[in-house]
Image 1 (cartoon, helix red, strand yellow):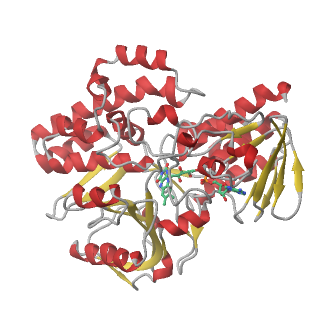
Image 2 (tube, helix red, strand yellow):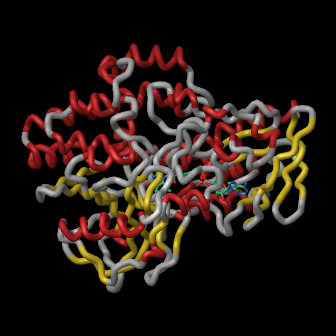
Image 3 (cartoon, protein in one colour):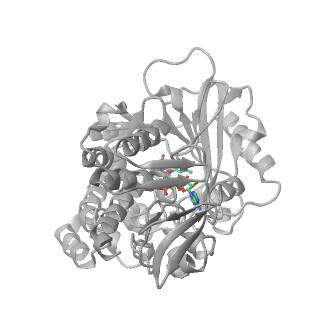
Length: 482
Ligand SMILES: Cc1cc2nc3c(=O)[nH]c(=O)nc-3n(C[C@H](O)[C@H](O)[C@H](O)COP(=O)(O)OP(=O)(O)OC[C@H]3O[C@@H](n4cnc5c(N)ncnc54)[C@H](O)[C@@H]3O)c2cc1C
């Protein structure tokens, strides 16, 4: 297995639990891939995913190994999903309890907005139900079942009109522009811009509305627990080793050549890196032919990500916070043209606010600004101003100010995840057919499989975990053939 990201780890647990002989190698020195930590004065800060949704997907992984997630990790359900802030001074909390969210929206923008929200909530739930089994849970999208499910859910129809974008749907769903902006933001969770993303991405809200969990001790503990479980089931892990070439003979994978000079013979290879690396030929010619270029291009969004410890002053932060740009066009217009946003929406995770108790000293923070995948020179200065000068306008300051080295720019992600070009979510989700163009677990090269955010069903921790299940099942079912 090449890669110990969440997709690779979930596949390793499932295959090792079935008795397969599993070896996992990763170029990094710890498991988790994007689910990584960086050091700070207050301890390791989560530098990747922080919002954990759809925990049932992870419960299934532990159950497949005959154990329970709660025996390995403590997940803390979050009654407050996120706190949202606008430049005009308005704020809105959304809650795990839908009636509490509806009441908050009524207080924020009136009875009409509350009715809009309740209607959008039903639309999102219908879409989620229609797409869950035949898209997310299925090894490949099942068009006929999607169509039947869609017919059975008339509330979902408006979002399924050909060519309808998320922005267009939200313009119909909400009168209040702030709510359009808030729910449009969910496109960025899978690396898209709302103007170009299909309206069906309205279903992401449902995934979050079903609950958000924090992992006690940090999200990276999830990766560590999965690696420990796979090891307990017999998988071997080798870190700080890069796969240089996937070798094949007569159209069948035979071995993986490693950076330490070793060659591992194998019947099957699961590639958990970005499929764009295969398309670029980074793993050799055989693997390059395994996918069409359209499986990796166009690319999804990247980000500038700050991770640091400091004492905050100003507004009362929750665990998850969003400080919105004054106009979505200022954020997404430049990004669509491959430039840095004129004004970014800033996501802040205040990691130490998982529970009521606050640490006495500096706290750990992650701040994300969406970005185009390829970075340009001089961006860091602009990024600093666009982060901390803007937050100061909301009254939020940090002491000490984070150093430049605490920011990972798109070029940093490009270096960390070879072939990705800095894109964090694989292929772009733009366009009606994007979900059907992502590569599936099986490739054209016999014995080469894919799992991860760049493969079906897509990016985000639960989706990458599902891709791990699809890949493990494909490998297991095909084993007699190899
Ligand atoms: C800043 C940030 C915030 C995010 N926030 C959220 C969030 O809140 N909620 C959420 O659900 N999702 C979030 N995501 C997305 C989520 O983290 C990813 O979709 C998911 O973790 C991707 O997992 P993956 O299986 O694709 O593996 P990856 O994390 O991409 O890991 C792939 C691994 O493969 C290894 N690898 C690749 N090529 C080779 C090679 N040739 N040799 C050896 N090893 C190799 C890499 O070293 C890496 O460790 C976020 C992502 C980022 C970056």
